Length: 287
Length: 318
Image (cartoon, rainbow over all chains, first blue to last red; front, side, top):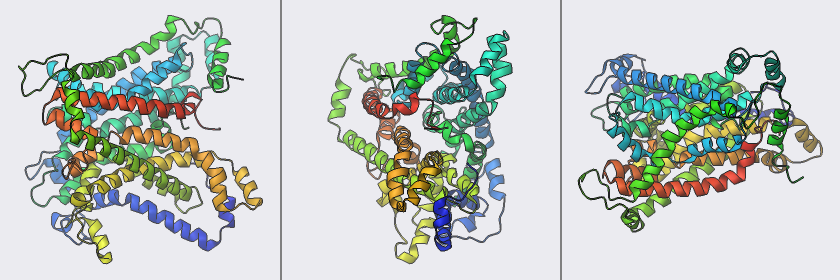
């Protein structure tokens, strides 16, 4: 975000208008943020404090719900094994994405192939086709290959899901490298690998990190493929949460604590990648 | 110049021609090598299933009757779908549950971006807060909304509304479409805020100052300068928002299960039910084929409208 400066419009506005607009901004933003805040707060309550028709805003915070989410209580599974699957699947799929996307982005930007435009549109077109169009064969193929409910299935599918985004995004970063830098490397006789390692990678490493974070966010939150293709052994955190859909007894604090844990990694990743978020989500179209 | 639209790539091609000796030409196979793994991978994982979906759609294939003859090729599934009133409902629901959240999130997004683009105390902090709904796991958010916010008895929304005489609404049961639309709008507004902010920050302050010195009103500045500047960003928001929201599944699966009755059953959810609850692979595949064809048609039109965004070097500095 640009350094804050007062625009002319701001300077012309009366102090009262400025104050009211500032207040309005805060109120609107807080309304949007409220569900997230409420989730985090409810997770810190005891069940009697959470399950009331009149919300308790003042309560004694406790981590008891977090402890029981971790250990598994009340007939609910414990979270750690699902977390482990989620971490493994997102990290591996993100690594695969970067390994495949970086060379591809290179061949679409720095030394473009003749049909680079068609290739780019092929990548983006795969993002436009709805996943429901592929889910049925994926299920049948996975069943026949005996990889239903296996973590490696989601690793492959999440890699395919994120690859187009990563190609577009990395390409937009590669295009920003000054031409002269790359040509200087050619003149020095650097081969492709050395050029990549000692010239390109250091320059685009922030972009590479942002791309990894975006892929991580999408893979971590993915639900449709996970719910249809996994049950226990390959199941990720969203599948754990779905167990709350048919609750028994008071559970709001328990649910909120579990949901908070599930959201935290991506919230942190997203806040960290804030400046590159738009670029990633728009696949490099907006800088 | 007939070549105006092509100018950005032409520049790049021109640059490519100035490459040093030792760099292979654009047509050379060695240039394509880095592309091959990604292309092969994408082809295998995304194209083969689509071809199979097409193939299944012409079979009477139900997992409940694994030994029944499949009668390939048969148009039976397609005939079933065109007589299926739930399918028609699902199509209408999909349109409704996509268009309303896309429009609402863009209007809200531009509004909030305009507010955030001013001098506001704690602006960076507010921006961090506003992107959170987009980041939180949709499954988690949907559960939290369902049980702690929208619930008739324990939900905090009814508590807020009680002073206004509305305190016992059954949101999920009686206003299911509004509930899903609101949830999707809440989820997608942050994305539109970010896009609109990027657009607002690319506009030149000089032009705005000039307009203001000339005595233009705030509204006419917005309509005649800001809005045209934002247009490509809004178009991109429509395109990306539609691509994702049309596939909305998590929130419907968790909050309403497509109900009550079929009020919030959109196409992804109906296909899911047909495939994984009725195990009718053939019919679900035929529906998926129709969805894919419709998406291709709409996306082609939309892409033509906004392709300048993607073919140029991006939107910064336009």
